Image 1 (cartoon, rainbow, N blue to C red):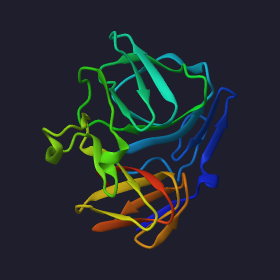
Image 2 (cartoon, helix red, strand yellow):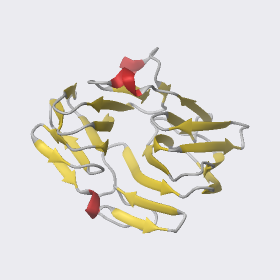
Image 3 (cartoon, rainbow, N blue to C red):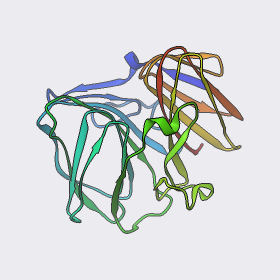
Image 4 (cartoon, helix red, strand yellow):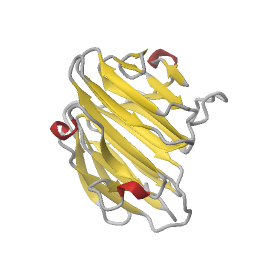
Length: 235
């Protein structure tokens, strides 16, 4: 099953400094048909104006992954962590027992991010934050694991998640394909950050979402230059 969620049908909230699209119910956007996808709870497509951002606020018991599409995001939290994550790179915040953080666009241009929340496997864990650069050249033509809590990825270079799931990314040239196997009981959610693709022959436009389940294997083929982000979780 591949359920396409066109960009134009996503929840929308324009706060002036923040222009957000919601793939699933979030904040003031209520949609009983889109509460999440398995352990994946939130996928927000955010555009943040220069010199603005999210002031300090708390989170608890959630794995929060930020994939930067354009620009950069600067993180600060009450644990003393601070860092700047640039386009193509990833940061992970495990909220655990509680963390207070702020996220700002300190750049002179608009910053565009995917903000992804995954429900943790274990509650009340120690909170932590980490970020890492992932050169896009390393994921040309195939999926690279960026963040994971899956046993199969233990010891890899991926950022660690407190959840049995993974965030992957790929870049494809026109006509190029990438294939990914999905074990029984697993699902995936795929969004092209850039470009048009097909997923097992089903067309997907830029920033559309594809909720995938009961597919043993998916093959993504680029119709044009494409950048893909995918979350794999228990369905």
